[in-house]
Length: 404
Ligand SMILES: [Zn+2]
Ligand SMILES: [Zn+2]
Image (cartoon, rainbow, N blue to C red; front, side, top):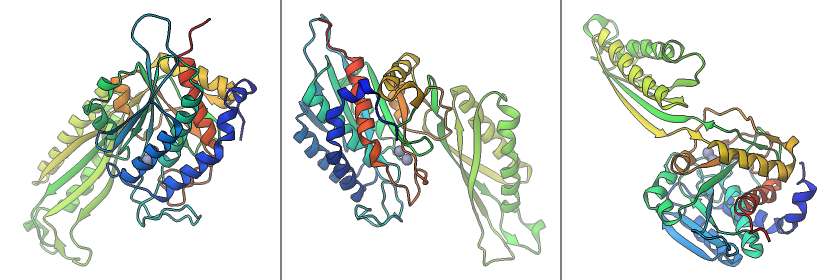
């Protein structure tokens, strides 16, 4: 793994030396995974660690199980309101049975930290400890431990609960480990990082009957087949070719596999639509609904589309992304920063925070053979100090001490 540049290594020696504690905390969190809005033990453990770090304030119960730690830097001689910067880590695990067998594997069957949020929390605790001990910044660092990232909209919940009214940060940054980048490399871009994610559920109401007498029924299985094919025209024939979008119908249910001659009443499809621009999202929602309803109608059935917008696109603001690129280059060297990382069609609820405040979402390479959300995924503890240093450097360089 690449080390920090010599300039940065001097500043963050302390973080490198404290690595063992972060690894221990990360593994402790790994062993006790909790789902979104159930992160009570996780939250309590993080609060305990933050108290030991000497942070100035801890605020619990924001967005149900969310929490915020506040660290004040040096007073500034400059007039005006104090400056605040936000840093965010997510806390929840996934409903997955872990297939690793190291000593710190999940102690809760069926739940697993398979997205590395245990690592993100440990990194941000490392940043808290470093900032509270050194305080080489002005203004205030606001450390956000967010619940329910995995489809629960925990970021939205924290914002609705007054996160940015109580802590009016000027900018906010988040980081996610990324197995597709080598350990210690940092990737981001100055615009869209991740797509908007929508959920589609389709109910096709036919009329059941005997497979030998299909003319007396309305076959929803046949209609589902036509709908599956037809929706693939949405992106290819409606969205401009230079735009990015995808429609995937991923599951289907109809009838009973044991009933080989029974035409069922109902067929159900479910899937996802991903896009970046609101106008493309709007177009796909309208066209998909009309297309599905019309295809069903053409066959003498009816279809209902339940279209839910889950997460908006995660879009970095240009100035803050640019700042984060410079900080990352200083930290690990320009050769280890990809500042034109292509966007991913995945999604992330940090998008809600980036809609409310300027900021940037970064990826921190962790390597490894196993991708996120896999039962053998393993967070790479080697990257803990780099991640903690990156968060700390954003604060120190974004809220610099007054020049003397
Ligand atoms: Zn995830
Ligand atoms: Zn994640």
